[in-house]
Image 1 (cartoon, rainbow, N blue to C red):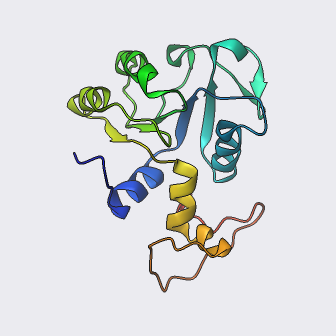
Image 2: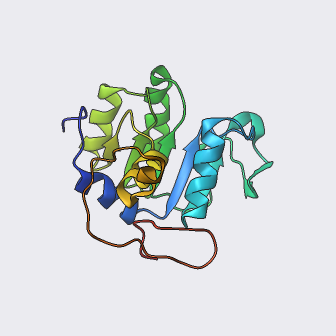
Length: 173
């Protein structure tokens, strides 16, 4: 697969198709990108599982933090990687040892490892690299346009207001 550019349908298919997300490299520091990505995704209805060996056994955003992917007691749909590119091969070893396998491995902005991506794809796992699910969700849902940013998405579809946290999102459930 070409990981230099992704179709909107590929990204939206992933974001609509996953429910549980393990965030590898999760931080309890509220100014770190992993923290606000977890908060945003929780607000959009995703089940978040923080993974950080230095914080294992403690909570981040009210969710128990795990030392390793294998420690998570529930099946994971997506692994979101907030680690440097050179850490990805070892993370991919953990991913490929999971039963069942996750549907997606998502590598954050500036994170890319083509060899690890190829291994995941050979196992039937979708891969996204050098992208942020929070940014992609907001772009596809039209939220990023609220700030005057060109999302590259043209739609005549009206946003759907939901109760609670303002969600104009792409998720239906």
